[in-house]
Structures are given as structure tokens and as C-alpha cells.
Image (cartoon, rainbow, N blue to C red; front, side):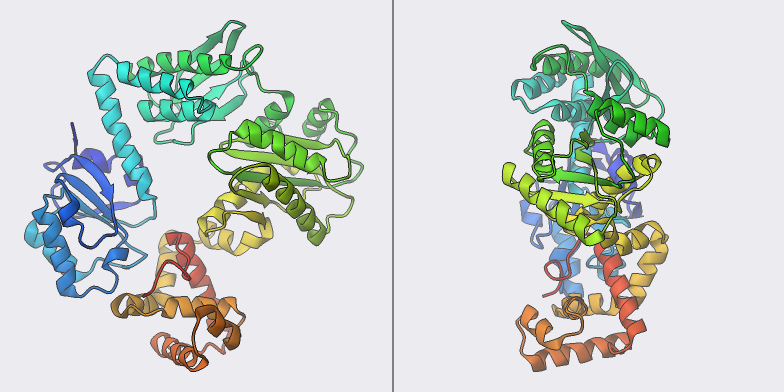
Length: 511
């Protein structure tokens, strides 16, 4: 069971990647599987019918003849199509690859935006699973749902499995309409929804919503998933896992339901918070290891904040979309260094309680409770931005990622791509062609505040070798690294390249 290449290109992840069909008739090509690899000698490992995804890292430093041979070996293996991401190794498709795909009539897809290849593979797998379920009685889907419950993987994993089967985002709402949890997998989303009530011994637990257009298949999946969710909720004690008032307030803040100062103060008062008395609010989002249940992370976070020695009861902890959301009362003056120190200490206490990593992102402290809803959204964005440029642990403040937000949110993607190409494109081309490390050298030199001694130590170079590299960088780019304006442009370009590709110049590029 496969799919046409046209169907594959309609999958959400392929659309999100800004896919361009450079060559090939997508309507007549059948796809058996979607696979990613950076191995140059990949042809002998394929069985035929695959869409092969690559960022071109395995083609780094290859000659035009090598690139043509790469296409030939894939064509000989019966590859269905080649998907090449531009922006990491290549800014444009090399002429030798273009000539080869036309000569061998191999469809070539170009991805202009970075989307994890894993998402593309997952989307294709979901497509096959949906077809299998639709073709049969639905037993396979039901088995997948019940197996998730039996294995005790948790509510979020169950919603993820439902999302895979239904091909759309899935959320569970409590009887009051507040969101309890959402799937991490959100292939399709829209205004339409298929809804089923989740019922248990204590009555209605809530509503399961499949956020996609109603089809007979989604209705069947919703009915089966509603039963599975009821079983999952029934695993705990008591009546139906209704979210407590803390979780309800967090969900409303995330959704923007509670935004006025009066409403926020009223809800906080209901939770037993003392008057704010002019104190600021510290807002943070925390990402923990995927293997840690969010319920465990919430409990550990509460302990980490309560154990700060102050004994302040004003701590709000809940979850949203895989993040633990935290709001707590700070002092009367929001001293940036003190806020960072307090959060670092709390993150260390939390990390001592949980296996794996802990990443905490925090906003600038909030003075007006009416700004709390927006601050929660910004805190979650801080975590996502930090993960994008490679941070996995520690504390990241909103000001730490200010340049990253400016580059990614305020600049048109094409304008940013052109700017990166103008500023550092010659270095990327040179590194690719000669297996050199000029991009890494430039990044290290700027990161070391222009200290040649520190840069040489970081790169493991003799001082004269570093001088030679810096001189070569200046010649290739036509800049002077002594000029502040030139360094600013290069630094922004490195930041834009890193945010676009997800690569660290110190480990992800060069010889």
C-alpha cells in the first residue's frame, strides 16, 4: 500500500517546507516509503519506491562528477523522488544535480523552509495507517489506542495516537469547556471539529475534539478514542480527572480567556494567593524530558518553587502543550540579576528531582496582572526559540533570545535568506567545496569577543593558522573584521542561518 507523489506533497509537513517540484510528474509517481539519510552511498541501501530526504550534508565537498553519480545510484535503486533542503549545504540546487535528475528523469523536490524530516516520515506513516484503518474494520486503530492505555503511556500519548489515526489535531476539554490536554502532533487543524463525549462511572469527563473536517473515518476514530480516553482517565482515583483550579486558570491564560486585571486577581484570590501588594509576577515555561509524565513534572515544579526558603504560597503551576507553565509572586522590585538567580536555583532543584533535562524559559517580569496571559504565551515561545538554536538545559530569559525573536519574527523569510546569502554565502560555499571551517572560525571569533588567543584555544589552532583563516575570511567576504558595522552584519547573518537551519556552526558544518 503506497501513495502517489502528489498525495505525499499534500501532507502538512511537505506543505510547511515550501516544497517546490523542480523536475518530475508528481501525478504518475508512486511512493512506497519516505526516508531520510545523509549517507552518500545510499543507493545500495534502498529497496525502491522511496522519497529520499536530504539536507545535502553527505554531499558536502563533493565534485560535480560525484553529485551526478549520487543521482545515478539513487535512480538505479529505483528511488521515487529526491527531496533536497536548501539553505544548509546548498543555497540553490547544484547544476550537476539538476542535469542528472533530468537525464535520469528522477523527480526532484526542493524544500525552501526547514521542517524536521522526522515529521515528513511521520506524516507519510500516518497516511498509510489511516488508509489501513479505512480499508478494514478499524481493528488496527482500536488496538493501537488500547495498547497505549495498557502500556500506561499517558493521556498526551493517547491523544497523539488519536491524532495519527485521524490526521488532525486532537484536544480534550473538561465539562466546562476548558482545555485539559492537546496532542503534540497537529497535522491538520481548522474550524471544523468532530466531537464525542468522554463518559465514565462518574458521568461525563469531558469532550474529545478532533480538529478537522468531519468524515466517516474521523467519526469512527473519535468514537473509539472516546472510549480509550475514558479508560485512561479511569486509571486514576476518583471522578474523572477534572483539572483543578490551577490547571483551569493556566488553560484559560493560554487560551486568552482571562485577560483583564480584575478577572486575574479574582481567580488568583480563589487559589488562596495573598494580595500582590505591588509585587511583580515571574512567568516561566519549562520543558522536561519527553519520558517524564507532565503530572510528575508539575508536582516536582511545585516542590522546587515552594522550597525556595520564602514559604510564599503564591505559586501557580499547570501544563499546556507539553510545557509546564509557572507563575509566582516576586519581590517589589524586578531586579534582573536576582530574578535570573532565583530561577536558576529553582531549575537546579527541579533538575535534581527529575531524570533527563530541564529547560526553563522566562519572560521579563510582569507588573500588571492583566498582562499575564500574553506573558504565558511569550514564555512558551522563549523555550521554543531556545530549543531552535540548540539549548536543551538551563535558564533562558526573554532578553537572551531578543535578537533571535527579531530575526525570525520581524523579517520576511525570503529577505532573511537573501541577507544570509549576501553576508556569509561565500563562506558556506567555500567550506562545502574545500571542506574548510571558515564559517566555524568566524562564529568562534565573534563568540570570543574578537580575542584571537581564546579563539585559537577554542578551535585547537596555532595562532598563525587562525590569522591565516581570518585573513581568508576577509578576502572572501570583502569585509574588515575590525569594522563594527561589518561584524554586526556577519553576526546577524550567522544568527539567521542558525535559526533557519537549526545547526550550530561549531558542530554542524565544515570539514
